Structure formats: C-alpha cells, structure tokens
Length: 498
Ligand code: AHR
Image (cartoon, rainbow, N blue to C red; front, side):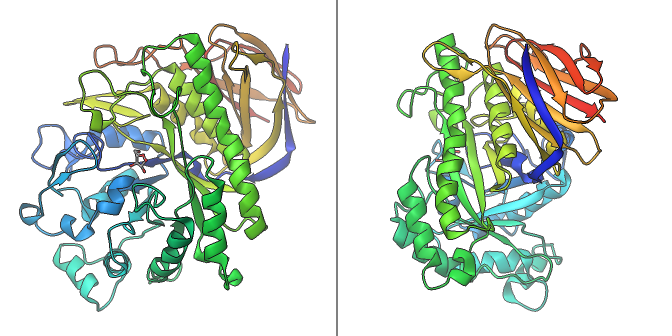
C-alpha cells in the first residue's frame, strides 16, 4: 500500500489562480470559430462570442487569458483591429496557415470576451516588428481615462471607459519568431519598450512580463537578467515576470507523433518529458534566485502542453489535434508541478484554449466537446487561490525504459476550508491501494471526483461524453487516514473536510 502524507499544519505558499491560465492566438480555429463567430452567426452567441464555449470556460473558472499570440503577437499591429469592422484591414496570416485575417476580432472584442468570462487580461505586445510608440499607444488606448488622443479614439470606437490590463508581455519568443535576437539585444530593447508601458491608474498597475527562455536555454535567462538588471538592481530588471515556454513533444520537434495513435512506450515517454517541467523551473529558478533572491519576479510559464502532428486532413498550419487520457495526465502533472513551485511560478497558460494544440475545448460548426484536459482543469479549480500544503507520496518507478513515478500529487488548503488533494496514477495498466495520512488532523468527510479511462480514450463529436468525470465514493475514513484504490490512468480529486 502506497502512503500519501499530508501535513495540514505546514502551509508552503499561495497558489495564484493564474497557475490555471489559458492562451488564445490568432491561429487556426482558436479565435475565429472557436471563440468568436460574429454577431450574425447562427451559432448562439453574445456580442459574437459563442455562448456554449463561454459557459464551459466559466464553469472551469478560467482565471486569465493571454492574447493575441504567440508568434502572431510580434506581427500584430493593434490599430488594424479597431474601428468599424468593414474598414478593418484584411491580410494573410502568414505565420499560421496562410488564411485571411480580417481583423474582426481585435482589442474591443478581446476585452468583451474577458468580460463575459470574468477573467483577467493578458495582452502580448509587439517588439519584433512594432515600434515603441505603437506599444505605448496600445497601452494608452486600453488603460488611459482622460484627455488623450488614444482615449478619445477609444471613445470614438464606442468604449469611453478604459479597460484593465492585468498582464502585459513585452514581446514573445524574441529569441525566435519574435525577431531572432540575442539575449543582450533583447534585454536592452526590453528596458526601453517597458518604460512606455505606463501605469495610468493607481491600484491597476500592469504586471510586466519579459520574454524568457525556450526550454533549457539557460544562456538566454542569464543574458536577459544580466542586461535588464545592469546599473539598476533597485528596479528588479524592470519586470514583474519572466516567461518560460516548454511544450511536450513525445519524440522531439521533428517527429511529434500522433495524438491518438501511440503505444505504451510513447505514453510513458510523453509523461517523462512532461515531468521535465520541474527541472526547468528549478534550473531557471536558480538563475533567477541570484538576481532576485526574494522571489519578487514571477516565472510565467505562458506556453505549455502537448504538441503532436496535426489531425490527418487538417491544415498543417492550424495545429489542430485530438486529446486523450494521456493529455489529461500531462495536464494533471503540470498543474501539480506549478502548485508545488508556487513560490516562483505566478502564472501558467496552457496552449491553446480552443481547437489548437492541447485544447480544453474542440468545436465543429455548432458542436462543441470538452476534452479530457478540460475535465482536469475543472477538477483542479479548487486549488485556485488556495494555500499549498506540504505533501509527499511514496512512489515506485514504472514504464519500461522511460521510467516515471507511478503517482504524482499536490495538496492545498482551499478557500472553502477543505483540503484538496489531486493525485494522478500514471500507470497505463495498474491500480494502486493508497493510504492518505493527515498529520494530527482528524478527517470528518470526503468527496471524490475521478477522471479515468484507457490511455487512448477521448471524446469525439459523435461520442462527446466518452471521457467524463464521475463521483468517487470508494474512500474509507479511519481517524486521520483515508484508504482507497486509485484506478490505472486516472486523475483524482479529493475534497477533504477536516
Ligand atoms: O502556440 C503555438 C506557438 O508556439 C506560439 O505562437 C509560439 O509562441 C510558440 O512557438
């Protein structure tokens, strides 16, 4: 019997709701079709936003949404997406799929979407091909209230009140698609561009995110932090957050493999690669510790998730992929890792929200399905705004050559006063007996929810509910302990009353 130890007496940090954030880019059918169908669509919508999708995302308590990219951000000129829709510029989305971008979804529409979702806003600015003036004016347009050319223009376009920009990214992947820069060059540009990301409203300060590394590019992290901190240590590198991008490719970038067609070896390989997220957080965190020992700068994992070959017959530039129980485990592991490192990780955004990469929702015309990954987010929402608790689970190594631990957990004390345990069983075939021990704390009651299935299990438009959560009531309470059996390939949430 494996033991899971939880110490309710030891709180280890606050879990920002934003650790369960999302990302939406002008890519494939994420924005257009997935989120926005326009007011004249037959698909039920409110101000152009799909009602079914908005409702599902609200249920999941989406805390923050990043937009407009991704690589698209460093080619996006925000003024193309404001004003009367019929006069907005039409252009080719050269980065993603070569389709026409009519700019009908722009700043006003993004803010309206976030209003409907009740989530925070994370805007990504353009450093790669945009000017300082353009970025500065975008911030003025969105957040300044008073007499100014941009505030007047916003009012003319139908929105006299300013909006709240919670997070602002100064460029995206500037080591790659955002300009192929060196860390020193970008670091200097970052210092300059961020100067004009002004805070116009007291109490509504913008959280500035500097472009951080790809995967294990420690050279970038060191170079950027050295440059941004030079001669200005007091300013903490002029940033609130530093981003990190890490995708799970089962077989590397050149051979991503299929989302649906994989064997056990590839399953474990995928989970092994996902667990690498923790090494990255520790590695980049150690460099950050030297510049920022008080952990004032957040690590912002604003792109993560699985990236497979596109579904056969779909546009290769649209990055549309299916989503199985394997992806559910990837989500559960990553979210547990973020919780456990909540002292440094302040936001994380899975890529991407709808119809792209590891999406929580897939759509086809008027149909919509929730993926296994959706259900994981819906189960983990109880960790939002909770306090991380000390926990430890006894594990054994499984998975042939690609050794992974059989179990993976995180535990928090929720806002509702209950202890929330999220436990993943990574084994594709074995169930395990578990005894959970709560130090010096009697357990009064427990409610469980489980997502489980064969590793390939997934939802389709014909069978939308094949993978779904179920009540898990086979838990025995004995004083300070709980006993239960966790089935193979599953994500479990226990809400424990103490
Ligand atoms: O999410 C897809 C792409 O992956 C993003 O546009 C880019 O930032 C990353 O390389």
